Image (cartoon, rainbow, N blue to C red; front, side, top):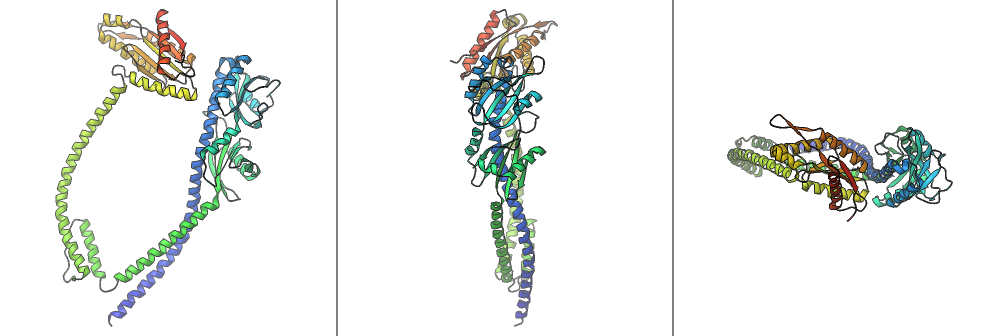
Length: 560
């Protein structure tokens, strides 16, 4: 009977603890509600941004390809001469090579269309078109607005670039039209999740393409206001929740490598209600787990509170601290022989066993540390040996340039890129004139120094995207991506002139000078084999030799 009041007092305390615990739980649930709402919006925004960057990247890739083609078109001599007969064929091939091109045409300084990929174009004048006026004024690459093509009848977005004249002013404008139906197709290829809406607008707020229904965006005036405000602020990315309960994120579309303003914007959105519904579900689950955990904790306290176990549990808790500090645990007198007493005895025995094993473990750890240090040293030596082997496999030890193996790997990669994208690719082969005479008259050590000096000079003169190689005894090669014949010839001539001015000191105080002969070749469409480009450049090299040496010759590669 004396124990009944004690049990009641413990029960009263447990009930009070339970009630007091419920108060902060209510606050936790309210805080979770706010947090889940914010987290759901943030999660939805992050998900939309991932989709946005994928969609914008796909559309920018299409636009960048057309911008690069437009720059290449303006750089051609036929364009700068406004050679209408030659341009008709060039523009036709450009339109056939790119499915996204609706049309490509060239206007003179008065806006008259003189050549076009699509026919007929007689009598057309673009002088009043915004893209023409902007290109003539800015003298750079500009993007127009949404129009219906007068020749093709397709909805298009024009990219225009002024053609420089001999006096510095523009003598005309080259234009490439992006077919907006191809732009809309990028959304379908992305396989967007259900409930996602996406649209592309030009710099004037006109809808260019939409998903799943572009016409719906034409009726959504609030969305066009968001796009126009983002374009006006020139904010690269952002997000907004509309009054209609839609969460949108956007990204501005800019010209590649240009400082001009954006030419369009991509928006991706979804219903904010769906994200909030997910937050409510998570809230209910979290609240249920919290309440259940609290109830279980109270029941556990009630169960453990039966009998006089509090002090003994404190002793066992002290045992846990002693075990973590590697101290031997000793039970107090009259600790009991029930389950808790048995547990205490086991813990005391365990502490003695762990103490002994920790001493053995410490000795073993010291031994392992020594083995680890030794192993680390061996691994470092192996890594250095591996790196040395890698360098030997791909680098010429004498000149520091890439070897023939590395040259073949680079050529395969660049020919694949040339075949896929059509960007210019050139190869320069050169060797030392009369190198055998240098070896015979000055010795092989001087010959090796000549090779080293030539390799260092070549490496210093090429661009960061170019690579130079030693492909034979005194034969060298330079692979020039994104480089046409004219640019490759200019590099080859600069290298030839620098080599002619180079002097290598002799052991007796004299010096030896030498020259090189170079062959240049540019890959043509359909060239997929290394031997095609290499053989043509080699023929050009021997043409330079036959022409008197110390000169550069060029040729055009033919497919095998």
